[in-house]
Length: 253
Image 1: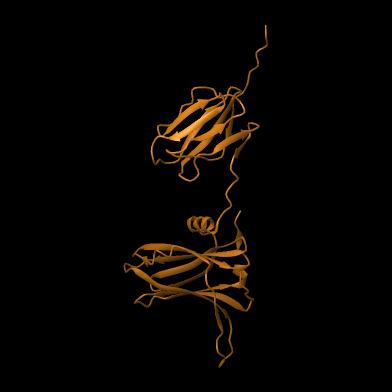
Image 2: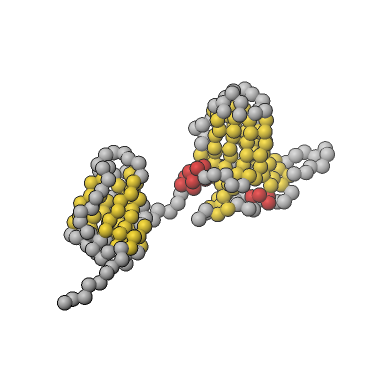
């Protein structure tokens, strides 16, 4: 009589799998799939060749869901399933029952990707802040990526009157200037911005903006000044970011 081996069911979390209704996404397992695969109502799942699972979306849009798959070797896999037109259609291979490897090389983060990530992140360190009337502004989450500096500007309108942005001006200036000396200002311009389409901040609301700059020199006796002017109003904002705050910029990982 053959001995019976008791195999403990192990569960492994995997990378996100992207699906759409127009492309077939596949997951290849190192062992055959234990049929049937119970998919959510928004997914169509089909087992092919024993260890290949083909997936498509049953509808054009759906919220993130999770798919559980068991294989005959006693392992259980959990996949976050996300709808995406652009990222669907890949062959995802499970290597050595432990790691998931997409057949396409991972996409390098773009400046826009970083901008969206910073805009959504919770502000954890304020580099500068000011207030004019019931409008407050702050610079937070100074970040460095690929030799570029990113600044997040948050405007909070605590009044009932909408705040219309006329323009935002960036320049480097000495912190101290002698009397009768002309103040020297050097304008700097962002190479990327996010949120510019939202030029009006309604009453009792806020707006987040992200600006990216190529690295520019600044000494300990200088600062980056950010001026936000209100259109047809006087609640202008002037923020001063010093060198020590810029040097504390956090890298994107």
